[in-house]
Image 1 (cartoon, rainbow, N blue to C red):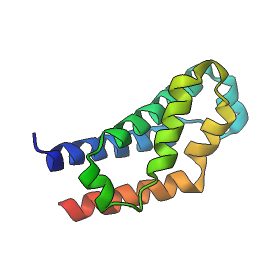
Image 2 (spheres, one colour):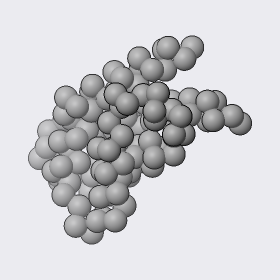
Image 3 (cartoon, rainbow, N blue to C red):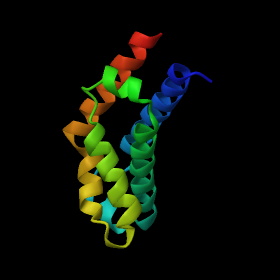
Image 4 (cartoon, rainbow, N blue to C red):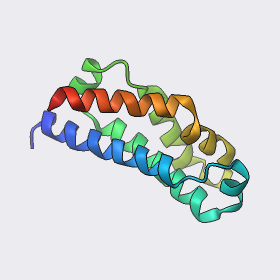
Length: 115
């Protein structure tokens, strides 16, 4: 598989993970914080998003500097390496916040330009 094709597959998977994160995370913070399964599933999705973003080709990264490379990869590192000390309130704020919704819109724009 060529880099371009691989990048598109990864980007579509990122969009799927973003959508799952938004759709499945409880809308109330207190509900999210009380639900271990929701917290863990959301954190793992956020980690996978960062892993996929990290795996995109350098060519793709250079072509799309508007994507939040640093933030997604940094969040992946926090979930992966600080799991025992993970602040789930931050995870909830990430997936319910405006920046995550803007990230989703960017992904949709990029993918629509590729079709």
